[in-house]
Length: 192
Image (cartoon, rainbow, N blue to C red; front, side, top):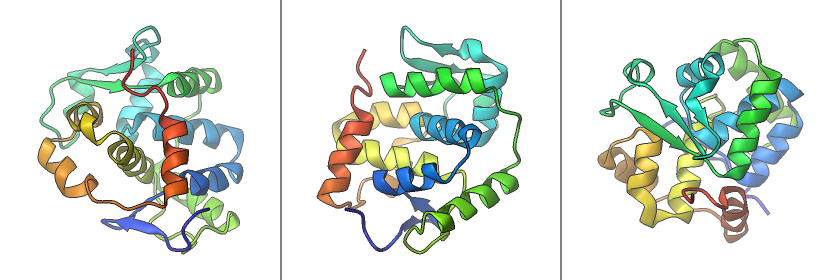
């Protein structure tokens, strides 16, 4: 069961697992691949598009993506180097994305596609707060809800400071069924 009211933080939607599945079904296979990786990695859009150009950043054995300084220096972060942690499902999503090898899509175009998918999926509050960055907010929120003891690891993977994590991600409420679905989605995250 999912809430009838959208979860919005700083004008950006935080999806529940059921909402993500409803949205995903409305997307074509290329957008599904893009959104799956954005959700599993929590990467910012510029980082995501650079990953496609630099597939060697992905390390399947270590289940991570190593983002070099040149990519993350454009983001608002104190990190000089960042390792994005993945679970097995995240690795599978990244490997599938590489096979799909999508052409770059503008943030505006992607927002339009996501809003249409949200309306077609009949999500609560339709397309309110729908934007590509919602995948980043969503995965960090899920990780913090399911693994609060891993806040430092989550912050490092996301490229956030501890203060940002405390301010934005430590007090979100979800329904019990949604948390159970999050745990299934995140299974194995942060384990080697």
